[in-house]
Image 1: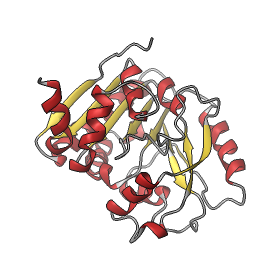
Image 2: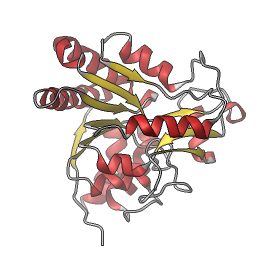
Image 3: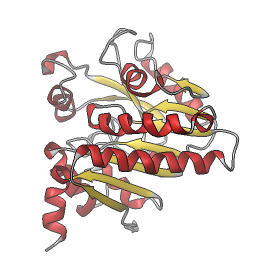
Image 4: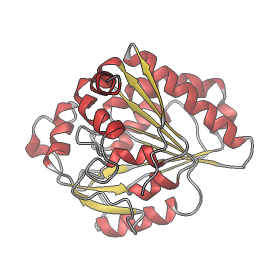
Length: 259
C-alpha cells in the first residue's frame, strides 16, 4: 500500500503571488543546499505556467548570486526533432526566462535535435544519475502529467532515468492551448523526458500550478487514487513536496476537499 504523505499546499490569490511564494521557497532550498555541499543540482520544468515563478526567481537569485554559481541546472524534457534554435525548445525557454539573467555553475541541456533520440536519452540519463538531485521545480499537465510522463506512458517503477516517449493528444493539445504552437499538427509527437522515479528520489519537489485549465488535474492529483492514471499523484508519495496554486487552479480541489 502506498502511503499518502499529503504534500504542503499553498493557495494564492493571483498567479504573481503564487510565483513569488514558490520562488522564495525554491531560493531557500538552494541556499540550504549550498550551505552543506559544494554543488546543488536542480531540475526545472519549462512552460508558460512557470512564467511568474521564473520572473520572481530571477529577482531572488540576483540577491544571492554566489549561491547560484554553485548550482548545476537540468531541464526535465525536450521535444524530439525541432531545430536546435527553435523558439519552442524548452532549453530556449529556460535560457530566456532564467539562465540569461542568472549565472550558474553549469547548464546541462537535452538535445532534441540529436540524430538518435534514444542515445541522447541515455546520455542525459548518465548526467542526471551522476549525483543526487536536490530540488525539482515542476508543473502539472492538464492530463496530470509530470514532465512528459503522460498517463499512457507513466511508470512509477520505471527502470529508465530518461526515456523517449510518445506524447498523447491531450498533452499535445496543451502545447497549443499554452500558445507554444499554432495548431495540433505542428506539435511534435515525441519527446525526451526524465521519468517518474527521478521525481520520487529528488530531495525536494516544488510544484507551481496556475490557471483554470489545471483545476481538474489538481483535484485528481491531490484527491484521486495514487498511480500512473494521474502521474502527478507522485507528489503525495514524497516526504518533501510542496504545491503552490492560484485560486483558479485550486477551485475544484478546494470545493471537494471542503466537503
